Image 1 (cartoon, one colour):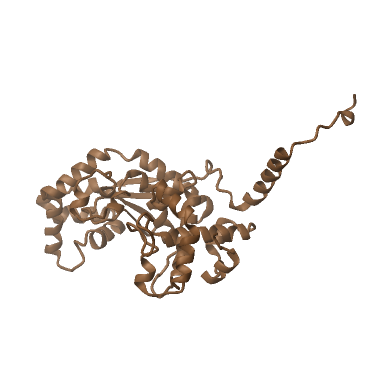
Image 2 (cartoon, rainbow, N blue to C red):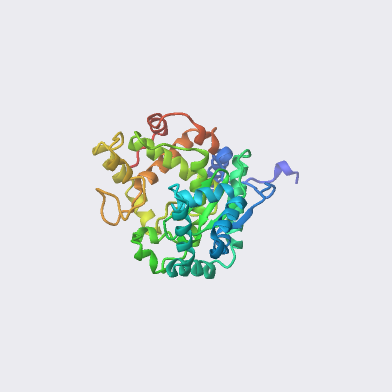
Amino acid sequence: MSPQNYPHKPLSALIVCYLLFSLLSACNTGKSSKDVDVSKVKVELKSIRFDQALYACDTSQLDASVNALGNRYPDFSNVYFKEITGFARNDDHEAFLNSVKHFLTYKDYKGLYDTVQKRFPDVKQIDADLSNLFKHVKYYFPNEKVGDVYYFISGLNNWSAVTVDTALAIGLDMYLGTGYPFYASVQLPAYEIEHCKPEFIPVNASKVIYENIYPFVPEGKNLLDLMIMKGKQLLFMEYTLPKTSDEWLMGYSSKQLEWCKQNEAVIWNYFSIQKLLYSTNWQDVMRYVNDGPSSTGMPPESPGNIGSWTGWQIIHAYMQKHPEKSMVDILNDPSDSQTILRESGYRPK
């Protein structure tokens, strides 16, 4: 029997639907697919234990030791002593040295340093995770310089991640686990303590790298502006950390994320009815785009930061309306927030 004479069996409706869905999915992923091969992206990660270098300073010759440290790591040392610890905010050099000596010798700070060394005797796994993040950043932004990572302790000053020019800095003392007792002692809120896990390091790193590439001044912006900005930031995080769940990207529990999905229309209607979207009132704006125990006007089981989550959904809807645009195209899109909202067709039901 020749091939053209084989009897044709009718495909079931289920198989036809599956094939159509697969075809449509393949067409829609195109430029916006997160499944990218970064194996050939070259990244040389240079890992620097600034915490260990600082605590290796000779307190009997502190001026010379700190000066040598500054010469060795000039850019980060300047930010560390002026911004992160605040030791060098004034021009009083003697007061600066006294602050550094106190930090190196006071039992509580020394105990914190010892705890960090026990928890992170090496940073190989963190380096591997960050290297993967850097590869994804370089894949989408080939001209970005990434690679140097400084590890430091801030004295529980809540510096989890920061960029210094092209370098990334990670505050290891903010990742000692939810059971670390002194987080509560420095009055860190419970919802923030939930994020004090090493697994959040790549998430926070991706967040600050985005802010370094796309600086944003929130002053004078309305809530919708900030929602779109945060939505774009989460899109960047989603694509540079493609294996990370939405819960981790948002800092939510699975229950909190599910609440947002089930109440998406309720959230949107609340913003609309209360005329919050175009409010520039600082209290109205910031409470919905920052972490918190819950969201004002919502039930107590709601998570904080629902404005950022909603902005993310708007950006997803906007991408679906513009399948020709890549993730980078979306981030670089100069359209204002109202245009993005209108063109997204975002109307949850």
